[in-house]
Image 1: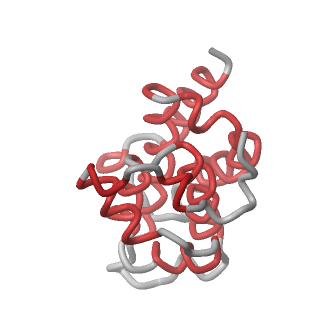
Image 2: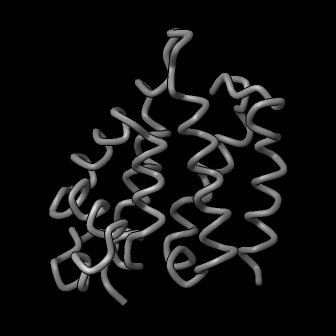
Image 3: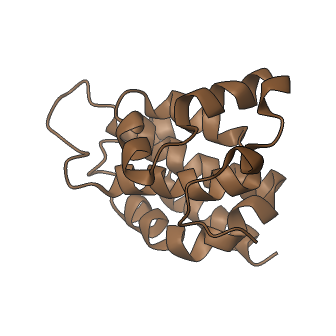
Amino acid sequence: MSDPRRVPTEADWGDYESDADRDAAHAAFGGKTRAEAAEEFAFGAIERADELRFMPPVAFRYYVLAFRDHVMSPDFIDDDPESWAPDAAAAFLDLIREKLEEEPDAVKPVLAELMPALEHVSAHQERYKADEESYGRFADTLARIKALAVR
């Protein structure tokens, strides 16, 4: 298995140009460090989360840690009523749940590194300003993630 601390190589991306979604993911993230990638989430976390869905496993495992870093950043949440914090927090949880449902081998190798952030986001739904009516209960999503993690 590839080292999740190493920037994915072109070989790790495979034939990304033959798939429009994977090509878009490569265009947004290819060759970037985790710190550089974390900054990309500030300009559209939902779109970046969507691009993560289409990455090959090695790239996904590397860049999902950048998403975690973004969501856990002390600068992430602000008092701006137009903040993207609730969307990004929900997208982070949903992405991990979805990967565990559909492609568990892509996420399980880094799940231990993600779990503290998943638990933090879930426990602080109100801090992320993510109302349950719009975003569901983060605790329910976390429970589903934990159930899928042991399958």
